[in-house]
Amino acid sequence: MAAPGHAPADAFFLDTADGPRFCLYHAPVGDCRGALVYIHPFAEEMNRSRRMAALQARALAAQGIGVLLLDLHGCGDSGGDFGDASWDGWLRDIAAARAWIEEKTGCTAGLWGLRLGALLAVCHAQRAAVPPARLLLWQPVTIGSGYLNQFLRLKLAGELLAGGSDSGGTDALREALKAGESLDIAGYALAPALADGIDGADARALAPRCPIDWCEVVAAPERPLPPAAARVVDTWRLQGSRVKVHLAAGPQFWAAPETVDCPNLIAASSAALRACE
Image (cartoon, rainbow, N blue to C red; front, side, top):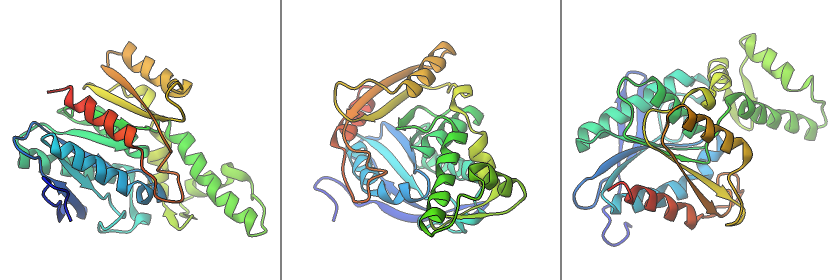
């Protein structure tokens, strides 16, 4: 049931050149003053973040911002197999979703991405002929190669728990991918095309040409932006990007085995976009 004053989200399949993509559209309440496409995180982080994405989408819709929650190729309820997904294909999905919501609302859409979805948003912003209206980045992954290594280590950990060895570590797994082999990791088939796209994505070289709200979840209110994130923010600012940093104390909900909320993150994001009126 929708919350009072909120219409239920409209679920539909968006036809794209690569197949149908499942979407949930949260229409703006009252006059529309903006639009966002949500780009979910990678693999199991997507499922752990669904509730937070829904809560934030409803909060933004209440502020007059239309929000489209997109399931990428092979993810969630979208068509296609995860094992057939590619980085460029996911960028095409984002472009198609952005075109849909811009036609629906008449607004140039922004992108809201979480974790690897934030890195996808930055890559789209760099490539698009018309930059998005803004970027709302939640806990962005900044260096794809490092994130890929973390994911590959899940396979190594699984092999060790099963009584095997690390079989050469992440270097061996990377060689298998380069040889055209897909890897089964934590129930997800990682194809070479997707791994190569993740591996080559580096936010440090992709200073976006639109306003950016960088939202970072920290353990306590007094904690600063982590050094690696601060270096990327500084690099972007030196290249002319307009970046505002928002720190929100709370749990890392995308990594928690149980469903947890981070109300401070929702409040910070809502306030950041409300300030754009």
